[in-house]
Structures are given as C-alpha cells and as structure tokens.
Image 1 (cartoon, rainbow, N blue to C red):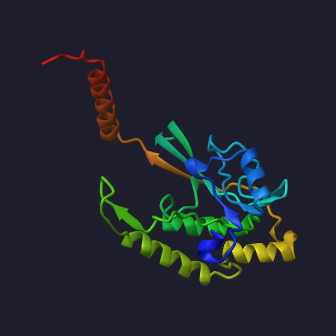
Image 2 (image 1 turned 135 degrees about the vertical axis):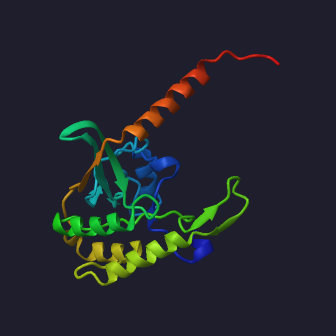
Length: 218
C-alpha cells in the first residue's frame, strides 16, 4: 500500500463481518499498524470485543470501536407490552437515519463518549442493480452525508478528524481520548396493528406449508 499511495497505513478494519482475534492484533503489531477499528459490540465474528464505544489501548494497539447505540422497540396494546425487540445499531450512513446520527452526537457529548466512528464502506454512496453489473450514485445517501457533516461542522465542541489526525493527537496526549463505554439507548413504542399482524401471520403459515409440501417429479 505504501508503494501504491506513498503513505504507510496506520489503521485497519477487518473484513468478513468484523472478523478479528488475538492473531489479527499480533499481525497489526508485527506490521507496525497502530490502530484497529474492527471491534463491533454484539458481532459474533469479533473475538476480541473488549470495548463498546470507548477508545482503549490493548496490547499495544489503539482500539477505535465501531460506535453503536441500542434501539428498543416495544409493540403495545394499551398499556400492555406485547413484544419488545432490542437491536444494536452502528453509526453508519446506511444503518442509521440522519436524525439518529445527530441524536448520537448529542448523546456522545452528554455521556462522555469521546469519538463517534462514522462508519462507511467504499460503496456507501452507490446503488447497484441486482447482479452488480451497473451502479449509480445514491443521491439520498450523498444528501444525508452532506447534511450530517454540515450539522457537525456547526455543532459547538464537535470536530471532524481523520484517522491520521486522530493518531497525531493521540500520540501527543492520549488522555484527551479517555472517556466512557456508555451505549446510548433510544426507545419507542408502536401501537399493535391487527391488520399488519394478521398479514405477517398468514405469510408465515403459507411459507411453512410450502416448505412442508412434498417434492414432485413432473
């Protein structure tokens, strides 16, 4: 990568759904890559999940986790909770709405989370057809990103930095990044919808019947 770009890489994120273990960290140390950004709370492939939203130094590697919040959704009939679902959401352009990304910034400042890791893939601002033979700009995501960056630029006490800038700041004063491991929680209630419930139930029954149907030769 240095031969291609003229710069030595300083940060890493594991592929295959955030796969990382102690061997991965050993490889980073051997290759003198100081930052890992693979740890994703709740991901089974992440075998060294020792932090949620807190920056830590672990065996010589600086960990900047994939920052997350928890979404709790309750389906209620009157005052009675019929169903509750809990889901971990990463601060990703494709995963979280613009309002929730902004909400996370406020929660981070309120609860001493020092860094929000704005997660993106190389294809985050693109749309593909079904067989990946054609792509177009995803203008909705482009607009979302622009609006979020505009919000952050104008938010007092919040600064946009690259991994390279972070590393220089960390080397100068690591203590400025010591914060909490708090995971913000967003909760909302939905009233029970009998029609939607009946449709989902009918689809489930039909699918079970299809799966149980004997195979026939024609």
